[in-house]
Amino acid sequence: MRLLPCGDRAILVEVADAAERRRLDATLRRRPLPGTLEHVPGARTVLVVASAAHHLPEVAAALRGLVLDGPEASAETDELVVEVRYDGPDLDDVATHLGVAPSEVVARHTGQPWTVEFAGFAPGFAYLTGSEGDLEVPRRHSPRTRIPAGSVGLAGPYSGVYPRSSPGGWQLIGRTDVTLWDAERDPPALLTPGRRVRFVEVPS
Image (tube, rainbow, N blue to C red; front, side, top):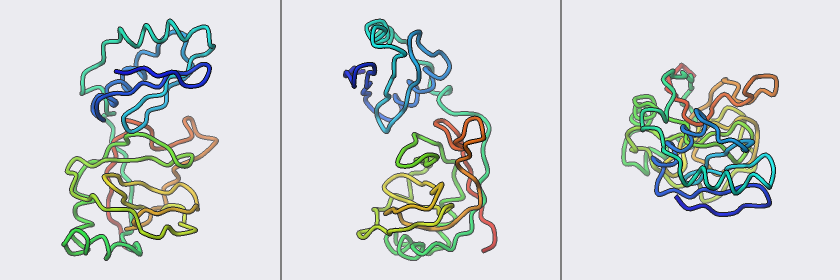
């Protein structure tokens, strides 16, 4: 792990790969370090925020000596089912890029478990990776100015669901009615790092 100062009371932890980041995230969720306020996982980083600037030295020392939990601790055991209508405007383009039929795109998306890696871009927006890695596609060349809430998309190695209407450049393959962000819920985000997700097709 590489520790980098970030602002006046945070440390950015860089790790070798996504697997190590999952283990670090899971370890900090299970065993929060004294003197920390929160931690925020990224693709291959974890931002650790101290409760006060004078705690940074002890937080850094604790991170350097931290023994990570095993890989089995990095994912939650319960699986969230998300129902999707696969009628997205980019479904055919995704199928063409992958050299398969649209039905095969749907079969691949529903036929594997997905794991929330990290959140970002907008409150409630989660980046998920599948177990098979067979749906990697580029972002759209021209982003849309408005994508409806509940749109299910693909970009790079990730799948995601737009929690609210916003601009975006992901390839849209479907839509869901699941509420991903609710300020009255604890936690407000339905998809949190480590959460397992299974997409299920429903009629359009």
